[in-house]
Image 1 (cartoon, helix red, strand yellow):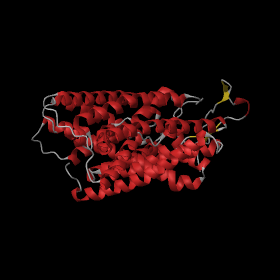
Image 2 (cartoon, one colour; image 1 turned 90 degrees about the vertical axis):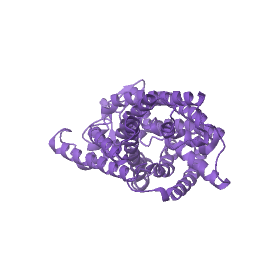
Image 3 (cartoon, helix red, strand yellow; image 1 turned 180 degrees about the horizontal axis):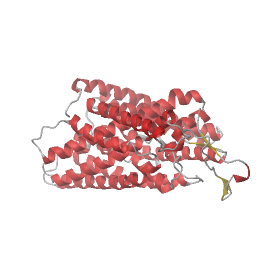
Image 4 (cartoon, helix red, strand yellow; image 1 turned 60 degrees about the vertical axis):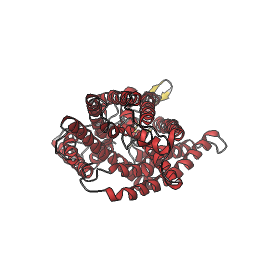
Length: 458
């Protein structure tokens, strides 16, 4: 059953600027909505959360996506995905505002699916996909944090003998602490720092790429797309999946749920803030790093930097430190949907949030969640291949398809209208990309399987 935050009936229904807005009551909210999705934030806070969920160290894989797509394909795909996701997120926010103005504020992705499409969509499709991609992002974040720690360690102690899984466990210990932050709204200051750090390490990566590319020791540049025609085709769809995953959010309704009423126009402002940061970081990192490394760009550009002796070690250490700190905020943000589900299942909304009755199950459930994610990240350091599959079959449906479906089902635009057909076209193209991208990702996993080893020190 979906959770709706109802309005106060009768004369207490408030009006502002001629539009009704929702005031929340606590008696009909479950513990997940009441404790984790507190509606206290401004559009600034919403922008911080959005930026942290999208502008993450995964953007350092954009040069690799360019390697698979080439200059023209890479830039077109980067711009196209940016326009489509901004449009999709805006439509999703309009649907949420519409329901709020009609008296029921939908707080979660699965609430939207239940209310608009029916409960089976939430139980068997939207809910599992959202939890899969968000928890997968937590695993990926812990893995990336461990890799950043290892990079710093190797630069400071080249003869050191510590293994990657040990750094992943250390970073997992940090996430154990961050996982206990009580609510999404409580992350607002951390996510402001995260936004600043994303600009900082993007500037460092861009500066390092330009310095290396303009130096006399610049690596040889070859921008041709490698592989046979069939291989190039599959690689292109894999590259599209990488870029789509970089733009992915997967929890916009939960982020919008943190906004205090009235909602009108606030998410749009938050999206504008977020996409200003996206334009600055994605374009600078993707273009500068691919210009420098060409078709030798690795899965993350930091791996390319580690093999270059002409770059000052302090610059690489600072870049990794910025990424390490920011990815902890990213992983903490993607923990919120599972945290909310734990609270809904185990907490008592009639008790105080910080009573022993609620603290003990919160501590146990969140800690186990992080411990399992850490073990998976340590065991499977090749999780990046799996994330491409998760991106194709998870993020693309959630962020490219479902917003259009929700909008058309809610507002029922005329089948002769432009918006109906543009939404339908985006759904059709995204569905094809999701299927082919999923096949391409599985193919890449099979090709790389011979190199897989549990607890590998990569």
